[in-house]
Amino acid sequence: EIYTRLCLVETIQELGIDRYFEPEIDSILEETYRLWLHNEEEIFKDITCCAVAFRLLRIKGFEVSSDFLVPYAERDHISLQMTGVSTILELYRASQIRIHEDETTLDAINEWTTTFLKQQLLSETIPHKKVRKKVEYELKNFHGILGRVGNRRTLDLYDVGNYHVMKAAYRCPTIYNEEFLIFSRQDFNICQALHQKEFQRLDRSYSDCGLDRLNFGRDALRMAHFMASTIFGDPQLVDARMSFAKNVVLIARIDDFFDQHGSREESYKILELLKEWNEKPSVKYSFQEVQILFTAVYRTVNELAERAYVAQGRCVKHHLINLWVEILTSFVKEFDAWCEDDAINLDEYLSFARISVGTGICILTSIYFLGIKLSKEMILSEECISLCMHVGTVNRLLNDLQSSQKEKEERRVNAVSILKESDDEEEEMAVSKIEKLIEYNRRKLLRMVYKRETIVPRKCKDLFSEICKVGYYLYSSGGGDEFTSPQQIMEDVKSLIHQPLKLPP
Figure 1 (cartoon, rainbow, N blue to C red):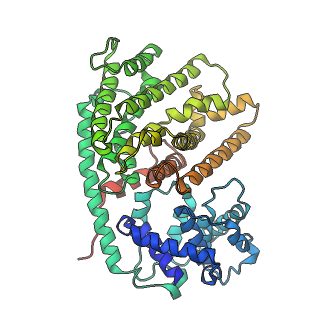
Figure 2: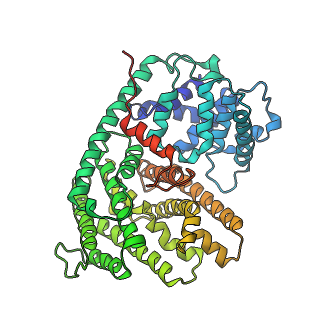
Figure 3: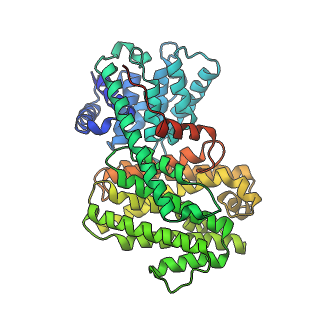
């Protein structure tokens, strides 16, 4: 049955073991798409099967129209007495895969399913505890569900006896069985042990660079390692994880130097040193912090360039240096905008703020270590530049929404304050405009990621969508930022990195 095969795909993906079954998953989805195009009754006569098929096919890049979900756009058209909560949850999940600007059907489904599921939680009418927890988790921050964090959550909720309550008639022992659970848990624990060893390496590198001697700023090491571990789940992607984590740490340290510690002259000095790029630069360091930060960037770039040469078969060092010059230039522009208190519009602000958020440099460095040969033309293509622009815009604006009050008190430049001043609007209206801009860029990003046969390989494009999820995860968490984290993030760090899953005797 079609639904059974789709459940198999979804279960494998949610357990985090899909990398072992990629040909089988591709085969199932290609056959499902063929049946979709032929209006196969088995798909469209069943709400759940239609919703799951739509979501999985669209994410895979198949052209599927949301018009097939029109019958479910209004709550009154569905018998809620005959429809289980899990079916409504599947409609909700399908409605979240909005990639076009005008998808009124999905918008309508999203509105009523969100309301219905929230009502079910408030009235405590979901009888199955694990289904209730799944609904809570999906509603909380759908676009911020990270790969490995979501896998751990699924493993904690995986119920061999009653995993998919709403579709008991379809339940297949091949899908929900003890062997799957044991294999997935063993795989998770193996990855976790590897991540723990990688943190030790990262910690040594941090000390070797002298960053532990800086007495200002945030301790970004553990959060950088956590983010890298959840984005790059495949054990073989160790260099991708390490490069990502090292860049996050350096960006955080230099950002804090610009924001809190360094003078304007010292901040300019770091940019000068990077532009000169010399082990023994003619530009004087002036202060120990400047020397530590530049030396850390210098050593890291040289190390990653050597590893990338092995992975790519060509030298990418010049590109890595340019990425650092670009982000430091954006830091300087941000610093100048704050110091000079000049009025700027939102477009002018985003021209440097979408770079200073750091997504571009982290992606375009780690992308060299995904096991795919990438030409210079691919990296410098208009497509790659646009992907960086959209993900940088989303993450910057999410950050600004969360930090607007703090930055208002510190009189720092922020998208919310810029809109309030330039358009003479109330804060509520400015926030609404920014939320719409975030949604526009998120949809545009995913539309590019899901599009087939483009210059940038799909595996590389997936990295952009994962970083977008990181933005939602970090900045929609209800307090703190990426390094002064609220309780839920700290619990996720603990479960992903430090708490192994129990295995049956």
